[in-house]
Length: 161
Image 1 (cartoon, helix red, strand yellow):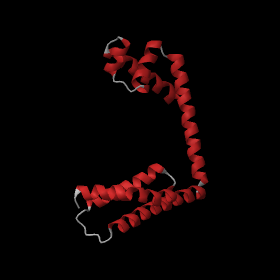
Image 2 (spheres, one colour):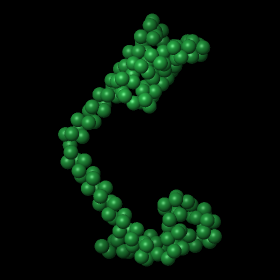
Image 3 (spheres, one colour):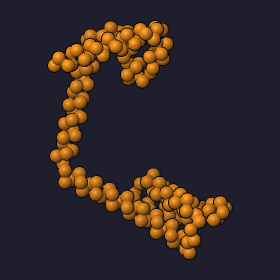
């Protein structure tokens, strides 16, 4: 199949495939993904001889869409069968949030403003020590010192509990 033939086929069948798949999925993005996957497969396997290429595309798109729906149904059934698991995850997230709040409160009480800024730039903003030092107008070793001291404080305080 030449690129011109593929382009013509794509332009001709894309809207038809969209109208076929959208009522099944009811999600525009997923619908586009399915159709693009079908055409990608066709492009990757263009050396195959297919008698009715449009019928092949329709069938393939419909089967992919039904497969996605089947997977979603399985997930929803699983969630209904295991509500306890979901509750455990909520408890875990709540516990994690509580611990994070304790850490932040501890840091607010114990850190100097410059150490707090260094920690914020490195851990919250994801800057390197060098970038944080430039932003704070201090040396890289000063940022390193603040981070190391803060981590030591955290270990001592929370490991003792």
